[in-house]
Length: 270
Image 1 (cartoon, rainbow, N blue to C red):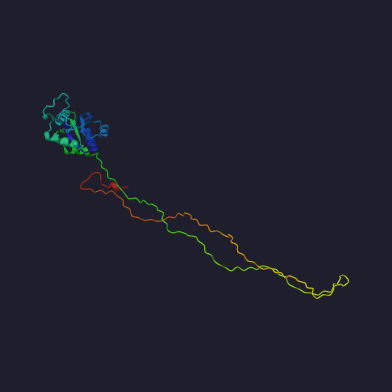
Image 2 (image 1 turned 60 degrees about the vertical axis):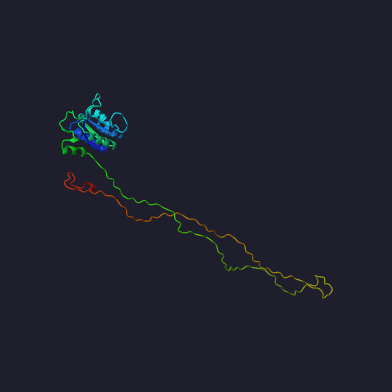
């Protein structure tokens, strides 16, 4: 016959309880677990204990949860379903309570009452002393995450100004000295050799015309390219200092009463 000795919330708590039983001398074959949970592979591989899926009392099966649970704990395949519940050494109220525990996803741990060990079993649902029950939780661990704020700096292109290039026309005086030519008249009287030239009849109607020519300046304007203006931009990188306050979580240990093994604060020993 098997007796339920504890109900646990998580597989981790169940493992701790089973390890406590193993240290008391129980064999893994003497220990069984009943649960409606499916995440029990780790529990089985860690402890070697048989894990049995609970029977749902609400599935409408003609066989009652009373009888199925009774058959499991008596481990009697030939037992009739009508066998007295007194063989289980549990009451009807306890059966209902265990069913509620299974419906809530809890794990029931049972041991074989015929196991050859020295540790007495309290069939009311636990070990015979408070100290023995305390062994179940010696390996239990709970975690508390520590968080801190970290700065995340983003960049955004913002137009802070622009450059526009235009032209304006200015007038200035330009002076130049340009050489020009012109004709000047001179009149001279020169003697000639009368024997070398033939003289024409005297006549007062003869005249000589000499044109007078001079150079005149004509000023024209022609546009020419003398320079050009190039507009561009380059990217310059520089450091810009930022200062911001961030929060960080630090663990704090509060002790109340006598706590063995915590004479110093392990959380602040870095």
